[in-house]
Every structure is written in structure tokens, then in C-alpha cells.
Image (cartoon, rainbow, N blue to C red; front, side, top):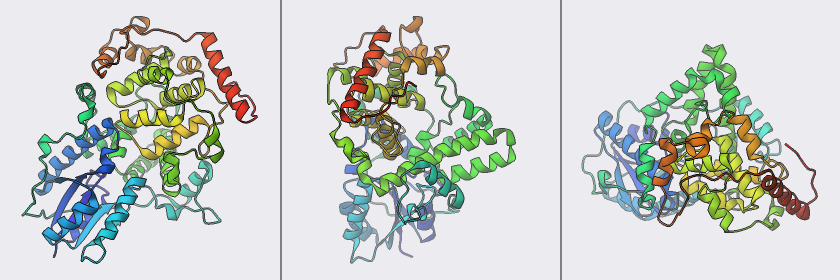
Length: 477
């Protein structure tokens, strides 16, 4: 049988990996990872985390099957047809990662392979269900979360696939880039050492272990998930973003646990709802690619957002003087992660109090998050800004001091990340300064500037801008 090429992207797992299973069943397999334009366009922290996922997958591939990943540099439509011709491949398998740039690359590759004996086979695996399986009564895509979630629960996610029992590696390998000398994120500079000190374990085994740990404490998830000072969330976002665990597999394991453990069932149900939110974001991005760069609601193209400014620079550098906002931005700088509640507060401060274009905040998150997800990032920023699908209305403005009092009542989270806040001197608070690039002159002792007057003025400014744009009721949440 002719060999197959397995084109890896963000599917670094053996369980529920349809492309890997199909390639393994077709004959000898050559796993390939490409450093292409779509990868280079991703944020530095995400590329750094992806490299860790790639290395973990390669190590497990060697251990299980004696195979290795061939790493090449170039565009898929240039590299893969030539590689297929060289090894005499009959098929090229890929798990369909439905990000717009990747879809365009897959389509261009398909055209390049036309007229050759090589079949490009795309497999599902990144989503719970194929978008065509969830349509409204009129045949269109869902645009509101609640009916989308109801429809998804009604049909249920696709069943996870099995695991390839064996894989025959290709013996005569072309020369590729050395994995042990690979550097996918040279632009991290000083931030690399800090991220490495605070990194979570990478790889499929780590993902499954983290899922097991979360399910053991899932009973408290629904009540505690908004608390950044507690270890209440799943911590699975990086693993999902890298494909170290598949959403269908995750759903099946969590659902089985909910049936076996009634005490954990409400928490697991809340968690699965969050997984449906992820699914909703991806279905929207696939159907409406403009979501990543343009306001979902076309009229918001005329909103008077501010562009680059000194206020945006202070926000990026986590020196806004708003404790919860700066703590979250520093957490992201040090770890590549940020608690979801704090993400909403930080985004609200930028788009509402500072009236800054949501796309500038989105770009900073995309460059800084190790769990970067293009669909969730775009939908959530538009949700907070008020211009997205199923969005919070613009006049809903998070008060960061009220949010901190409610969700970080003892100040443990803020103390962890803000050097000098209530005498904080911890390692995480100091690590932020080890991560700063040249030219970032940030005072070591954090300065509190959250005066009632400042908060009130920012809120009034936002409401005035919105009133000039469109009449709307006021929400004093």
C-alpha cells in the first residue's frame, strides 16, 4: 500500500484523532508539521505553547510507534504536493481545523493536488458536531446561543473515535528541521524563561490527568468558577487549544462521570455549557469569518472607538492603576493564562472606560495567551464590547472594584500578582518584571488609581459616547 501523509496542526493526541487513525489504516505513515504563514501569524505565546505540544506528541509517537514528526518550513501548497510525489503517497490526511486562514490554505492545497494521484482527506475532530448538522428551521446558522445550545443538546455531540492500535512509520525519511533545535517563538525574548517557569505540563497524558483532577472537584465548579483566587476552573483551555484532548472525548468522559457521581453532576453540567459556548464561537467563525476582524453588528463599524494611545499602552503594560485589571494582565504576561472572569473585566475596562477599539485588545490577547483560540477570542471581545453576537449591551459596564470585592473578596488573587499591593512580595508578582521587554519602564511598586471619581468619569464618558451613537437604557449593574 502506498504511504500516507499525516498533516498535523492542533491535534497533538492519539485518542479521538480521526486523521491519524485513517492514515495508520492506509499503510505507512509520515507525520508532518509545517511552519507556514498561518503559524507565523499567530501570537508568540501560542506558538511557544504549540512547540511544547509538538515535542510532547513527538516523544509519545517515538515511544509508541518508533516514528517521528517531520518538520518542514514553507506553505502547504508548495511543500506537501512535492513531498507526496517524493515518497509516492496516495493520500494526505488532516483534521479539519476550521480557522479562516487554515481553511484558505486547505483549499489552495486541494487545487495544487488536483490532477495528481494524491487524495486530500479532511476529518472532523476539532468540534463536537459538524456545523452543517446544526441549522435553524430555515436552514441557516444559529446566531443566538440559547437555541444553539438547545439544538446541540437535542442531537448530542458526535461520538469520539477510537485510537489507532498500530502505526507503521515510513522508514526512508526526507530531511527536516531538527526538533531539538526548533524555536517557534523567537520573539518572546525575556518572556520565554518566565513562561517556562510557570508552564503547565504539556501533552495528551497531562490533559487527561488534568481532566481527571477537575472531575474530582467538579462539584464546586458552578458556584466557584468565577473566583480567580480559587482553583475552581478546569485548566483545560490550553489542552483544548492544542488538540491534546478532543472536545468529543472530553464531553463523553465528563458526561459519564456526571451519571456516576450525582454530587458532581450540576458542576459538570455547567462545565459542558462552557464547552457549548466554545462550539458556538467556532460555528459562528466558520459561517461568518468576518467575526475575527469586523463587528458582528455592521452598524458598529461607525462607533467612535479610540485607536492606539497612551491609555492603551498603560493597559498593555498592566499599569492602569485598577487592581483587578492589572493583576489579570500581569498573570497573562507571566503564565500565558488569565482567569475568564478577569478577562471580561480587563476587556470591559479597555472598551468601555477607555473607549478603545476591541480589536486592539483582541490582538494583545492573541499575542499573549498560551490558550489562544481565534473563535473564542473574537466572540468574547465582541461580546464585552457590545458589538458581537448575543452580546452584552454596551451600557453594561463592569465596575472593577465591585467585581474584585465579589470574586476576590480576600484579595488573594490581586496580592499574588501586584507587587506592593497590600504589601505583596511574592514570586509571581516579581516574575512580571523579569518578563518585560526592553523599553517597558514599569514602576516596581504598583500604584492604586481606582478612585470613585475616576470610575464614575469613565462610566459617564462611555455612556455619553454610546448615547451619541445610539439611544439606549442605562444598566447600573
